[in-house]
Image (cartoon, rainbow, N blue to C red; front, side, top):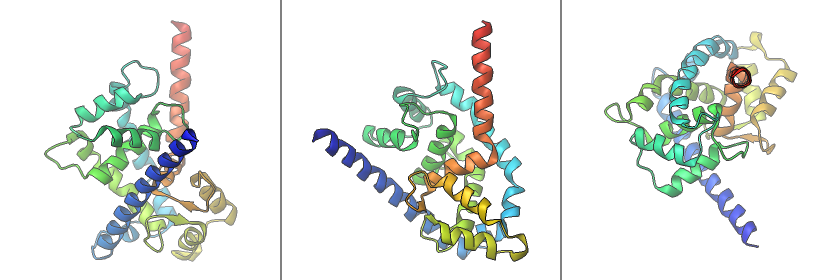
Length: 236
């Protein structure tokens, strides 16, 4: 009974984080609609998004040094105590309970450690939720340009601006924005399945981030990095 209540409480906390992100994304959607630099104007077709993949990849790979700095035992993942130190270094004064929630929220494979792709997602979520200023959290604030552009991709796909994606709206966006650049149905289905981790027919911003990292090749690079590290250990 106790374990069931624990799981239920965790699920409720994660739903609260999902809703908090949805509200934030919805606010950004409204703000962008009255601005000349909206995501929909920056990205007018899926091809315009794909063309920026190398830019996204190069920008996100710069986080590797930061990740290795906080992975103090060099085991390829950041545990809870290492994450707490990371937040202290970034001048993020979050309650212990909130740190735990973010840790488990981004530890999507449940291995009790934040791997590199999960670290990127974690920083992006904190950037959106905590809104670091340029005077503090300098490292995080400097990543604002790349994180904001990723949000613009999400806004391009979020047809109704409710902060989450569904398959119908995603297909509609990809195929109606520029009809002569229609994305094949099987490709669209694959892309949506890659993002819809819990198979509930909707994609939260967190799920989108993990899918997006896979699209731009971060997961592939991470697998190569882990393989190289393993080979170096065997050689030593």
